[in-house]
Length: 410
Image 1 (tube, helix red, strand yellow):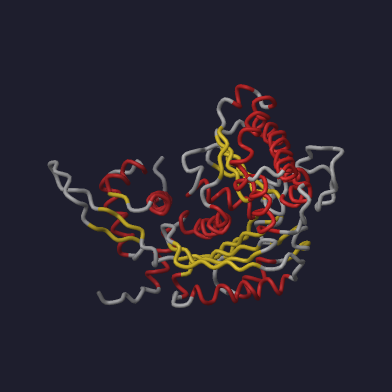
Image 2 (cartoon, one colour):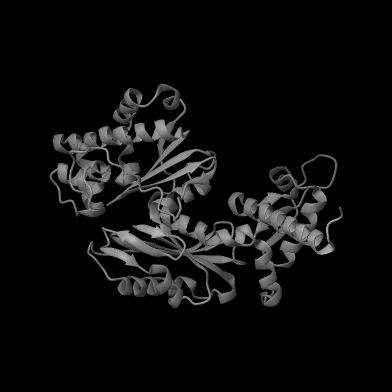
């Protein structure tokens, strides 16, 4: 049976959109590539690549340059460059002790980034949104509205991704706060996506950091709270509403301390920043300065500091052994405070994992600190904001056709 003409056309358009997406995603994540590289990475034919690159060049998303002669027969394959000013996103981050904003271009170029510390105290949603807008305005100055393709927000709390409501953020004092809605009012007509900061830290490490070459990853971020991100077969495990990854609230010690979530014995109460500082005789709300002092003291051999960090190593190993047995990752990436103390705990942590994890799974997994530092979740927020364009760049090209950019003269 011959399909109706409009059905054939629809399938053809679907294929075109999918192929454009494959090319744009490769350029965004890998940077400049030759047409030959794009053929190899996408599996598309040379003629398909040529036609689709022509569309992307016409829409201003990419540019092409000649490659240097290779000294071999034939014409060198042109190099395709993502155009970092053709599409930008605004990334925002809300943590317990800082706010951050960044303007990031297609291809991952960071055009501007600012982070400001704030006191560790419960702050209203209205105050936070106002502060974020104040941070964003100068770094977006000079960016035409039609180049801003999305806003991504990382927040230290449990987030319902469908509408950006922060269901619970004990360390911020928030319960069912409509962060996405308030930001949408402040930045009208720009798509906004909100997610948990640890989820986005893991996303960033997977796309641009320590986990680029791994498909089965556990990302564990320790700050005031402890959160995580699980990647299985190259795909993030997000759960029915986006709540997956709250591994800091996995019960590891039934006789343990009261957690900010209301439960007892959560992993966070054993390996979190506050617990680590308290056991070392320091203020649990001392923040980064107190952690710096604790690390320096441990490196100098102070007994109480070493005991506190050793406690973290043991309980980190207990929790990770369970997750390794359950998920069989090839890589565990540590972020936040856990990354900073990793050189001090690596030997003890490996010893615990050797004793507690199943040998078959333990033999496959490596544990290492993240590569993106403090800004990992912020860069993950940028990736979240770019995702709709990466999934359907044809929609972006259509928008450019309706509103063609004004190009500066050479």
